[in-house]
Length: 483
Ligand code: PMP
Image (cartoon, rainbow, N blue to C red; front, side, top):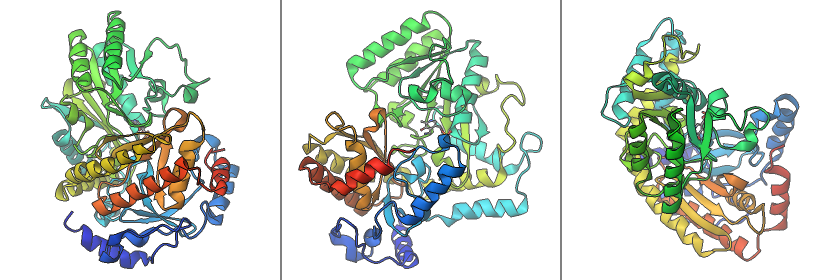
């Protein structure tokens, strides 16, 4: 993190921010005068501001509704360091990172430059016909950083969904078995196979057959007892001999940062090995250092047969995903069996290789571990407002704060919206959308973590004592529900 201070100083000038007036009168932390970007938070216009709202109206008129989920109705314009600015000029500390993509924050021109330098030489080669150096070099890098000591190969893609599809195809072809076991409330994507394997039933209704015998869902365990039950359940299904692979997020991301009990994945891997069934780890959200190790699988000391990566892989600079795993499984697919016109797009993978360089050079996996542990400790302390905060959990900088939605179904959204008004840009997700997503950039500093902690405590206290302004609750009803 050596150059972080310099970068912050530079950014301070760039952003040209003054102390945020903040609608909620956010008190500045003690370190605000010491040259950190702490004063960058500035919510001077009630979000969503008029420019955001105008864009939302145009969006509703022109873009199909399934492209939009809805969060706050805010449109974003720019970013600096760990901060994002909306089209109305408000500045927030970013804890969503474009759904966990922008892991380097907004301060690494090197990545954009790597893209540009390649694009001005040749923008696209169509890798399937004419390979390029950038993609082969990127595949070599991926083999080196991904879990497992076996002989690996990579298939490059564009977005998590297509690489999940590739993993399912490869597993089917290799094992000769069509069955895929996945988990309720898993999110694996929005294309054919990835969506069928996903466990958010409302998204699949009327499009995918919930009773498709080739996609069986089991419960993701969070306690040792549930772990036993799920393993037993999986073994019963395996005994039919129809399953080729189990597909799982090592930490369930969109389900609300759910963690399996200790030892679950080791036992699952052993169980599958006994049946010749493959383990596919979906590390689209949990990979690239977010959990404080390169891969969430590393915490579990398992080497999945296939690992799917995306999101942070390119730190948000280009659509890039990858499937990395056992060479013999990957090569079960026939030549041209998994190709997309834009896969192996030279500028995009050059950018992604630059991301790996930066993570290594700046020790960002370690920063995620250390700052993440500090952040989690602070968030957990908010559990003392037990009527509001059920639990803070997660690993590294892949964290979640579960809000009690039993008495008030809107509570998590009110919580998130109130934090937004105080300058912290969270998401919310999971069953009943009850979990606040805490996914800041991996370059987050301890001081920035302290700002997040303070706002979470302030809002938890306001909610515990019924002090959230009615106007905020009204805005939640109007703007956070999507369409
Ligand atoms: N897997 C996981 C764990 C994800 O979180 C997501 C996206 N939320 C996907 C797969 C799908 O990735 P994409 O949206 O890039 O297709």
